[in-house]
Length: 380
Image 1 (cartoon, rainbow, N blue to C red):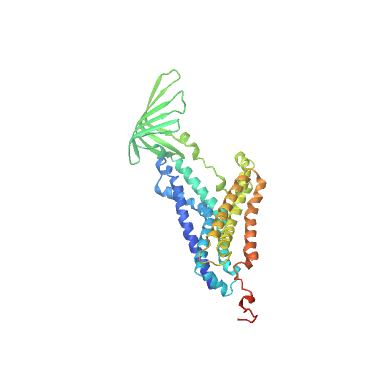
Image 2: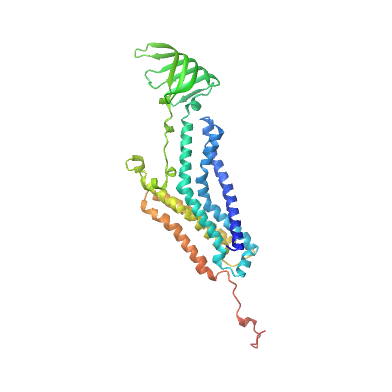
Protein backbone atom coordinates (compact mmCIF):
# COMPACT_ATOMS: atom_id res chain seq x y z
CA UNK A 1 0.00 0.00 0.00
CA UNK A 2 1.07 3.58 -0.63
CA UNK A 3 1.52 6.02 2.24
CA UNK A 4 -1.92 7.55 1.80
CA UNK A 5 -3.51 4.09 1.63
CA UNK A 6 -1.69 3.06 4.81
CA UNK A 7 -2.80 6.30 6.45
CA UNK A 8 -6.42 5.67 5.48
CA UNK A 9 -6.22 2.03 6.60
CA UNK A 10 -5.03 2.89 10.10
CA UNK A 11 -7.46 5.78 10.42
CA UNK A 12 -10.38 3.44 9.86
CA UNK A 13 -8.81 0.65 11.95
CA UNK A 14 -8.39 3.01 14.91
CA UNK A 15 -12.01 4.09 14.66
CA UNK A 16 -13.20 0.45 14.39
CA UNK A 17 -11.30 -0.55 17.53
CA UNK A 18 -12.67 2.42 19.49
CA UNK A 19 -16.27 1.83 18.39
CA UNK A 20 -16.16 -1.93 18.98
CA UNK A 21 -14.58 -1.36 22.39
CA UNK A 22 -17.26 1.12 23.43
CA UNK A 23 -20.19 -0.91 22.15
CA UNK A 24 -18.77 -4.13 23.58
CA UNK A 25 -18.41 -2.56 27.02
CA UNK A 26 -22.07 -1.48 26.95
CA UNK A 27 -23.19 -4.92 25.76
CA UNK A 28 -21.09 -6.68 28.41
CA UNK A 29 -22.54 -4.39 31.07
CA UNK A 30 -26.06 -5.31 29.96
CA UNK A 31 -25.15 -9.00 29.95
CA UNK A 32 -23.54 -8.67 33.35
CA UNK A 33 -26.74 -7.27 34.85
CA UNK A 34 -28.57 -10.41 33.73
CA UNK A 35 -26.00 -12.56 35.57
CA UNK A 36 -26.33 -10.92 38.95
CA UNK A 37 -28.28 -13.98 40.16
CA UNK A 38 -24.94 -15.80 40.36
CA UNK A 39 -23.96 -13.51 43.22
CA UNK A 40 -27.36 -12.79 44.77
CA UNK A 41 -28.84 -16.30 44.62
CA UNK A 42 -25.88 -18.64 44.24
CA UNK A 43 -23.40 -16.59 46.27
CA UNK A 44 -20.53 -16.90 43.82
CA UNK A 45 -17.40 -14.79 43.97
CA UNK A 46 -16.90 -11.64 41.92
CA UNK A 47 -14.11 -13.43 40.04
CA UNK A 48 -16.55 -16.10 38.81
CA UNK A 49 -19.04 -13.41 37.87
CA UNK A 50 -16.55 -11.43 35.75
CA UNK A 51 -15.17 -14.62 34.22
CA UNK A 52 -18.64 -15.60 32.98
CA UNK A 53 -19.33 -12.09 31.67
CA UNK A 54 -16.03 -11.99 29.76
CA UNK A 55 -16.73 -15.38 28.16
CA UNK A 56 -19.67 -13.74 26.41
CA UNK A 57 -17.40 -11.12 24.82
CA UNK A 58 -16.46 -13.06 21.62
CA UNK A 59 -20.06 -13.48 20.55
CA UNK A 60 -20.86 -9.82 21.26
CA UNK A 61 -17.78 -8.56 19.40
CA UNK A 62 -18.61 -10.74 16.38
CA UNK A 63 -22.14 -9.32 16.26
CA UNK A 64 -20.92 -5.72 16.54
CA UNK A 65 -17.99 -5.87 14.10
CA UNK A 66 -19.95 -5.26 10.83
CA UNK A 67 -21.86 -2.33 12.30
CA UNK A 68 -18.70 -0.88 13.86
CA UNK A 69 -16.88 -1.20 10.52
CA UNK A 70 -19.67 0.73 8.77
CA UNK A 71 -19.74 3.55 11.33
CA UNK A 72 -15.93 3.81 11.48
CA UNK A 73 -15.58 3.82 7.67
CA UNK A 74 -18.24 6.49 7.18
CA UNK A 75 -16.81 8.68 9.93
CA UNK A 76 -13.20 8.39 8.75
CA UNK A 77 -13.92 8.75 5.03
CA UNK A 78 -16.24 11.70 5.60
CA UNK A 79 -13.65 13.52 7.70
CA UNK A 80 -10.84 12.85 5.24
CA UNK A 81 -12.98 13.75 2.24
CA UNK A 82 -14.17 17.04 3.76
CA UNK A 83 -10.52 17.92 4.39
CA UNK A 84 -9.95 17.46 0.63
CA UNK A 85 -7.45 14.66 1.21
CA UNK A 86 -9.37 12.29 -1.06
CA UNK A 87 -9.58 14.97 -3.76
CA UNK A 88 -5.82 15.48 -3.58
CA UNK A 89 -5.26 11.71 -3.81
CA UNK A 90 -7.49 11.47 -6.89
CA UNK A 91 -5.79 14.49 -8.43
CA UNK A 92 -2.46 12.70 -7.90
CA UNK A 93 -3.71 9.86 -10.09
CA UNK A 94 -5.25 7.41 -7.63
CA UNK A 95 -8.18 5.45 -9.04
CA UNK A 96 -11.45 4.80 -7.24
CA UNK A 97 -10.25 1.25 -6.49
CA UNK A 98 -6.97 2.51 -5.00
CA UNK A 99 -8.85 4.94 -2.76
CA UNK A 100 -11.32 2.27 -1.59
CA UNK A 101 -8.83 -0.62 -1.31
CA UNK A 102 -7.65 0.16 2.29
CA UNK A 103 -11.26 -0.06 3.52
CA UNK A 104 -11.87 -3.30 1.63
CA UNK A 105 -8.62 -4.81 2.91
CA UNK A 106 -9.67 -4.01 6.45
CA UNK A 107 -13.08 -5.55 5.68
CA UNK A 108 -11.38 -8.77 4.51
CA UNK A 109 -9.38 -8.90 7.75
CA UNK A 110 -12.62 -8.42 9.67
CA UNK A 111 -14.17 -11.29 7.67
CA UNK A 112 -11.29 -13.59 8.64
CA UNK A 113 -11.46 -12.53 12.31
CA UNK A 114 -15.27 -12.82 12.34
CA UNK A 115 -15.12 -16.29 10.78
CA UNK A 116 -12.49 -17.39 13.31
CA UNK A 117 -14.68 -16.25 16.18
CA UNK A 118 -17.79 -17.90 14.71
CA UNK A 119 -16.17 -21.26 14.03
CA UNK A 120 -13.87 -21.75 17.01
CA UNK A 121 -13.65 -19.02 19.65
CA UNK A 122 -17.40 -18.48 20.22
CA UNK A 123 -18.31 -22.18 20.71
CA UNK A 124 -15.34 -22.68 23.01
CA UNK A 125 -16.19 -19.60 25.11
CA UNK A 126 -19.91 -20.38 25.19
CA UNK A 127 -19.27 -23.94 26.40
CA UNK A 128 -16.93 -22.71 29.11
CA UNK A 129 -19.55 -20.15 30.19
CA UNK A 130 -22.32 -22.74 30.20
CA UNK A 131 -20.22 -25.14 32.30
CA UNK A 132 -19.27 -22.42 34.78
CA UNK A 133 -22.89 -21.29 35.17
CA UNK A 134 -24.03 -24.90 35.64
CA UNK A 135 -21.38 -25.51 38.31
CA UNK A 136 -22.31 -22.27 40.08
CA UNK A 137 -26.00 -23.15 40.16
CA UNK A 138 -25.19 -26.67 41.36
CA UNK A 139 -23.15 -25.38 44.27
CA UNK A 140 -25.27 -26.63 47.19
CA UNK A 141 -23.01 -25.06 49.77
CA UNK A 142 -23.66 -21.61 48.31
CA UNK A 143 -27.35 -22.25 47.66
CA UNK A 144 -28.29 -23.76 51.03
CA UNK A 145 -25.94 -22.38 53.64
CA UNK A 146 -27.24 -18.95 54.59
CA UNK A 147 -26.90 -18.54 58.37
CA UNK A 148 -30.00 -17.15 60.03
CA UNK A 149 -32.25 -17.81 57.02
CA UNK A 150 -34.56 -20.61 55.95
CA UNK A 151 -33.57 -21.79 52.48
CA UNK A 152 -35.12 -24.45 50.27
CA UNK A 153 -34.12 -26.55 47.32
CA UNK A 154 -37.42 -26.88 45.50
CA UNK A 155 -40.17 -28.43 47.62
CA UNK A 156 -38.14 -31.38 48.86
CA UNK A 157 -35.66 -29.80 51.27
CA UNK A 158 -35.73 -26.92 53.73
CA UNK A 159 -32.55 -25.96 55.55
CA UNK A 160 -31.74 -23.66 58.45
CA UNK A 161 -28.54 -22.92 60.35
CA UNK A 162 -28.38 -20.51 63.28
CA UNK A 163 -24.80 -19.42 62.62
CA UNK A 164 -21.63 -20.35 60.79
CA UNK A 165 -18.15 -20.28 62.27
CA UNK A 166 -15.51 -21.07 59.69
CA UNK A 167 -16.56 -24.35 58.12
CA UNK A 168 -18.75 -25.32 61.10
CA UNK A 169 -22.53 -24.79 61.16
CA UNK A 170 -24.37 -24.55 64.48
CA UNK A 171 -28.05 -25.02 65.29
CA UNK A 172 -29.01 -26.94 62.16
CA UNK A 173 -32.56 -27.85 61.11
CA UNK A 174 -33.33 -29.98 58.03
CA UNK A 175 -36.82 -30.81 56.76
CA UNK A 176 -36.68 -33.62 54.19
CA UNK A 177 -39.87 -33.85 52.09
CA UNK A 178 -38.58 -36.37 49.56
CA UNK A 179 -41.36 -38.71 50.71
CA UNK A 180 -44.39 -36.43 51.31
CA UNK A 181 -46.25 -39.14 53.21
CA UNK A 182 -43.36 -39.71 55.61
CA UNK A 183 -41.46 -36.42 56.03
CA UNK A 184 -38.33 -36.36 58.15
CA UNK A 185 -37.13 -33.55 60.39
CA UNK A 186 -33.56 -33.53 61.64
CA UNK A 187 -32.10 -31.35 64.39
CA UNK A 188 -28.35 -31.17 64.91
CA UNK A 189 -26.10 -29.28 67.29
CA UNK A 190 -23.49 -28.76 64.53
CA UNK A 191 -22.74 -29.81 60.97
CA UNK A 192 -20.01 -29.62 58.34
CA UNK A 193 -20.23 -29.90 54.55
CA UNK A 194 -17.88 -32.61 53.27
CA UNK A 195 -17.45 -34.77 50.18
CA UNK A 196 -17.96 -38.48 50.78
CA UNK A 197 -17.24 -40.93 47.96
CA UNK A 198 -17.60 -38.13 45.42
CA UNK A 199 -20.98 -36.98 46.72
CA UNK A 200 -21.72 -33.76 48.65
CA UNK A 201 -22.62 -34.78 52.19
CA UNK A 202 -23.64 -32.85 55.28
CA UNK A 203 -22.07 -34.48 58.34
CA UNK A 204 -24.42 -33.84 61.27
CA UNK A 205 -23.20 -34.14 64.86
CA UNK A 206 -25.38 -34.75 67.94
CA UNK A 207 -28.41 -35.13 65.68
CA UNK A 208 -32.02 -36.11 66.35
CA UNK A 209 -34.21 -37.50 63.56
CA UNK A 210 -38.01 -37.29 63.85
CA UNK A 211 -40.33 -39.12 61.45
CA UNK A 212 -43.97 -40.16 61.36
CA UNK A 213 -44.41 -43.81 60.44
CA UNK A 214 -47.33 -45.41 58.56
CA UNK A 215 -49.39 -45.47 61.78
CA UNK A 216 -48.78 -41.78 62.43
CA UNK A 217 -46.53 -42.68 65.33
CA UNK A 218 -43.60 -40.37 65.97
CA UNK A 219 -40.28 -42.15 65.62
CA UNK A 220 -37.27 -40.44 67.22
CA UNK A 221 -33.68 -41.50 66.59
CA UNK A 222 -30.55 -39.99 68.08
CA UNK A 223 -27.17 -40.02 66.33
CA UNK A 224 -23.74 -38.97 67.45
CA UNK A 225 -22.85 -38.48 63.76
CA UNK A 226 -25.23 -38.65 60.83
CA UNK A 227 -24.14 -38.28 57.15
CA UNK A 228 -26.92 -36.61 55.17
CA UNK A 229 -26.41 -37.21 51.42
CA UNK A 230 -27.27 -34.16 49.30
CA UNK A 231 -26.94 -35.81 45.87
CA UNK A 232 -30.70 -36.21 45.44
CA UNK A 233 -31.22 -32.49 45.98
CA UNK A 234 -28.92 -31.29 43.22
CA UNK A 235 -30.76 -28.75 41.09
CA UNK A 236 -32.18 -30.18 37.91
CA UNK A 237 -31.03 -27.20 35.85
CA UNK A 238 -27.42 -27.88 36.82
CA UNK A 239 -27.22 -30.42 33.98
CA UNK A 240 -25.22 -29.02 31.09
CA UNK A 241 -27.40 -28.43 28.04
CA UNK A 242 -25.60 -27.15 24.94
CA UNK A 243 -27.48 -24.71 22.76
CA UNK A 244 -26.94 -24.02 19.06
CA UNK A 245 -24.54 -21.17 19.86
CA UNK A 246 -22.38 -23.57 21.90
CA UNK A 247 -21.81 -26.12 19.13
CA UNK A 248 -18.97 -26.30 16.63
CA UNK A 249 -19.66 -26.18 12.90
CA UNK A 250 -19.42 -29.93 12.30
CA UNK A 251 -21.85 -30.53 15.18
CA UNK A 252 -24.34 -28.18 13.53
CA UNK A 253 -24.14 -29.79 10.10
CA UNK A 254 -23.96 -33.40 11.33
CA UNK A 255 -26.41 -33.78 14.21
CA UNK A 256 -26.58 -36.86 16.39
CA UNK A 257 -29.47 -38.83 14.86
CA UNK A 258 -29.76 -40.94 18.01
CA UNK A 259 -30.41 -37.84 20.13
CA UNK A 260 -34.11 -36.98 20.08
CA UNK A 261 -33.61 -33.33 21.06
CA UNK A 262 -30.89 -32.70 18.44
CA UNK A 263 -32.94 -34.47 15.77
CA UNK A 264 -35.93 -32.32 16.67
CA UNK A 265 -33.85 -29.14 16.31
CA UNK A 266 -31.96 -30.29 13.19
CA UNK A 267 -33.39 -27.51 10.98
CA UNK A 268 -32.55 -24.80 13.53
CA UNK A 269 -29.00 -26.16 13.88
CA UNK A 270 -28.58 -26.15 10.10
CA UNK A 271 -29.74 -22.53 9.95
CA UNK A 272 -27.23 -21.64 12.66
CA UNK A 273 -24.44 -23.34 10.69
CA UNK A 274 -25.18 -21.32 7.54
CA UNK A 275 -25.45 -18.15 9.62
CA UNK A 276 -21.98 -18.78 11.07
CA UNK A 277 -20.57 -18.86 7.54
CA UNK A 278 -22.57 -15.99 5.99
CA UNK A 279 -22.58 -13.30 8.68
CA UNK A 280 -18.84 -12.52 8.17
CA UNK A 281 -19.76 -11.42 4.63
CA UNK A 282 -21.67 -8.52 6.20
CA UNK A 283 -18.32 -6.86 6.87
CA UNK A 284 -17.74 -6.46 3.13
CA UNK A 285 -21.33 -5.29 2.64
CA UNK A 286 -20.92 -2.63 5.32
CA UNK A 287 -17.59 -1.42 3.96
CA UNK A 288 -19.03 -1.06 0.43
CA UNK A 289 -22.04 0.84 1.79
CA UNK A 290 -19.71 3.20 3.66
CA UNK A 291 -17.52 3.71 0.58
CA UNK A 292 -20.51 4.47 -1.63
CA UNK A 293 -22.02 6.80 1.01
CA UNK A 294 -18.97 9.08 0.96
CA UNK A 295 -17.14 8.43 -2.31
CA UNK A 296 -20.06 7.50 -4.56
CA UNK A 297 -20.74 11.01 -5.81
CA UNK A 298 -19.37 14.46 -6.37
CA UNK A 299 -17.22 16.27 -3.81
CA UNK A 300 -19.10 18.61 -1.49
CA UNK A 301 -17.84 20.64 1.43
CA UNK A 302 -21.36 20.64 2.88
CA UNK A 303 -21.10 16.94 3.55
CA UNK A 304 -22.93 13.89 2.31
CA UNK A 305 -25.74 13.60 4.82
CA UNK A 306 -28.29 12.44 2.27
CA UNK A 307 -26.16 9.60 0.90
CA UNK A 308 -24.99 8.68 4.39
CA UNK A 309 -28.61 8.56 5.55
CA UNK A 310 -29.57 6.23 2.71
CA UNK A 311 -26.52 4.06 3.34
CA UNK A 312 -27.33 3.86 7.06
CA UNK A 313 -30.86 2.77 6.28
CA UNK A 314 -29.47 0.18 3.88
CA UNK A 315 -27.03 -1.13 6.51
CA UNK A 316 -29.79 -1.53 9.09
CA UNK A 317 -32.01 -3.15 6.47
CA UNK A 318 -29.34 -5.70 5.51
CA UNK A 319 -28.80 -6.65 9.16
CA UNK A 320 -32.54 -7.07 9.72
CA UNK A 321 -32.98 -9.14 6.55
CA UNK A 322 -30.11 -11.43 7.55
CA UNK A 323 -31.62 -12.02 11.00
CA UNK A 324 -35.08 -12.63 9.52
CA UNK A 325 -33.67 -15.12 7.01
CA UNK A 326 -31.87 -17.05 9.74
CA UNK A 327 -35.04 -17.21 11.82
CA UNK A 328 -37.14 -18.27 8.84
CA UNK A 329 -34.60 -20.89 7.73
CA UNK A 330 -34.91 -22.57 11.13
CA UNK A 331 -38.39 -23.67 10.03
CA UNK A 332 -37.83 -23.88 6.27
CA UNK A 333 -34.34 -25.25 5.35
CA UNK A 334 -34.46 -24.22 1.63
CA UNK A 335 -34.31 -20.59 2.81
CA UNK A 336 -30.71 -21.21 3.88
CA UNK A 337 -29.76 -20.46 0.27
CA UNK A 338 -31.04 -16.91 0.77
CA UNK A 339 -28.64 -16.47 3.67
CA UNK A 340 -25.90 -16.68 1.04
CA UNK A 341 -27.66 -14.87 -1.80
CA UNK A 342 -28.60 -11.80 0.27
CA UNK A 343 -25.07 -10.63 1.22
CA UNK A 344 -23.47 -11.83 -2.03
CA UNK A 345 -26.15 -10.06 -4.08
CA UNK A 346 -25.66 -6.79 -2.19
CA UNK A 347 -21.87 -7.07 -2.59
CA UNK A 348 -22.25 -7.60 -6.35
CA UNK A 349 -24.71 -4.72 -6.74
CA UNK A 350 -22.64 -2.22 -4.75
CA UNK A 351 -19.43 -3.26 -6.52
CA UNK A 352 -21.08 -2.69 -9.90
CA UNK A 353 -22.48 0.70 -8.87
CA UNK A 354 -19.21 1.98 -7.41
CA UNK A 355 -16.55 0.42 -9.62
CA UNK A 356 -18.40 0.06 -12.94
CA UNK A 357 -21.10 2.74 -13.16
CA UNK A 358 -19.18 4.87 -10.65
CA UNK A 359 -16.34 5.43 -13.12
CA UNK A 360 -18.30 8.39 -14.43
CA UNK A 361 -19.32 9.70 -11.00
CA UNK A 362 -17.36 12.33 -9.20
CA UNK A 363 -15.63 13.60 -12.33
CA UNK A 364 -15.70 17.30 -13.05
CA UNK A 365 -17.52 17.90 -16.30
CA UNK A 366 -15.47 20.10 -18.60
CA UNK A 367 -17.45 22.93 -20.22
CA UNK A 368 -17.73 22.84 -23.99
CA UNK A 369 -15.06 24.74 -25.84
CA UNK A 370 -17.70 27.01 -27.39
CA UNK A 371 -18.32 28.67 -23.99
CA UNK A 372 -14.78 30.07 -24.11
CA UNK A 373 -15.13 31.47 -27.60
CA UNK A 374 -16.18 35.04 -28.35
CA UNK A 375 -19.24 35.74 -30.51
CA UNK A 376 -17.03 36.11 -33.60
CA UNK A 377 -15.87 32.52 -33.17
CA UNK A 378 -12.31 33.33 -32.12
CA UNK A 379 -11.02 31.77 -28.93
CA UNK A 380 -10.91 34.17 -26.02
